[in-house]
Amino acid sequence: MGNIKVETKILTKNEQKAKYLRMLFKENNILVLNFLSSPGSGKTSLLESILPILKEKYNVGVIEGDLATENDAERIRKIGVTCYQINTHGACHLESSGIEKALSSFSLKELNILIIENVGNLVCPAEFDLGEDYKIALISTTEGEDKPIKYPTVIRNSSALIINKTDLIPVLDFDVEKCKAYARGINSSLEIFETSCKTKSGIDNVINWIEEKYYEKTGLCRS
Ligand SMILES: Nc1nc2c(ncn2[C@@H]2O[C@H](COP(=O)(O)OP(=O)(O)OP(=O)(O)O)[C@@H](O)[C@H]2O)c(=O)[nH]1
Ligand SMILES: [Mg+2]
Image 1 (cartoon, rainbow, N blue to C red):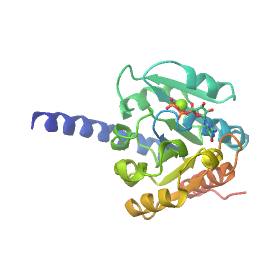
Image 2 (cartoon, protein in one colour; image 1 turned 30 degrees about the vertical axis):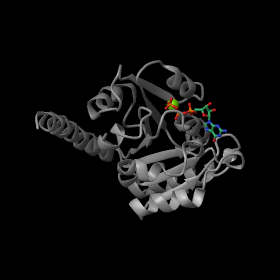
Image 3 (cartoon, helix red, strand yellow; image 1 turned 45 degrees about the vertical axis):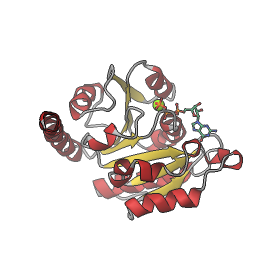
């Protein structure tokens, strides 16, 4: 009973801050995406694939979340994109207070798209609102097609699912259609993409979806 009370209190505090951030992002016309997956599904690789294209048209910023190291932030900075690394030192997810602190590294007036890479974990990050517009879940083919039904919360709370590492399908038993059916059984409005960060297959569809969402949010005309 005590644990439930503490958890509810943390969530409420997090949700209040997330609500404030969502207002701030709206005021500044910033699209905010929160990427979630198990460790190693390819979140940073996906960012490395989409950022060189997005940064040509938009002012993009990235917040990286990891227990330790600056590794992912360094990968993003190599592309020429501003990146703030949060080290959670043991916590399995990012919280909205951490996002608020990270914002001092960006000029909100100039930013168009803010991408958050959450801590590699399919459980806790799904429960924490960071003020984002969309949560995007990644599952890689090496993890098995049953992940959507084993981790339903992340699928329920996400707007899009990216099935990554499709280049490895020929050497795996991963059943893409089964994975999609499992995911749609939990969330029928889920947008599903199939990508390979190695061959770049399907990356253009993800970029197109992000651009659509940017114009939808800002009401600007897509040129
Ligand atoms: N074959 C193949 N390998 C990939 C693909 N995407 C990522 N990888 C590899 O998978 C490994 C993990 O990729 P990352 O992008 O670091 O994964 P991540 O989800 O950011 O990992 P964490 O931040 O540690 O949770 C790396 O060795 C990548 O090269 C892909 O589409 N195909
Ligand atoms: Mg990463």
